[in-house]
Image (cartoon, rainbow, N blue to C red; front, side):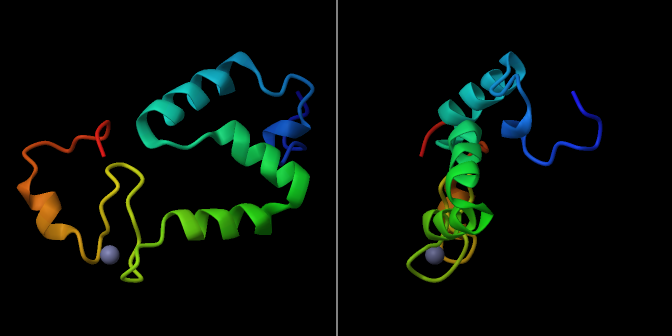
Length: 92
Ligand SMILES: [Zn+2]
């Protein structure tokens, strides 16, 4: 590994390493996102493409921001959030 010289994981010869795969698995199951897919998109199309995709994915129709942890919009979904007894990240 080149210390301080790797900007994105895909620049590493070990990409995707076991550690990143473990993180990816957790994010896929809990948050419906893949860090590996995101890195592949950056490599293929650039960081702006990823940001555009993420902006689309996490924008509510009200214009607010949707939490990746529970799928609830911070602007229009607060009442829904208050109804929940626990901060459940696995079901949304
Ligand atoms: Zn909203």
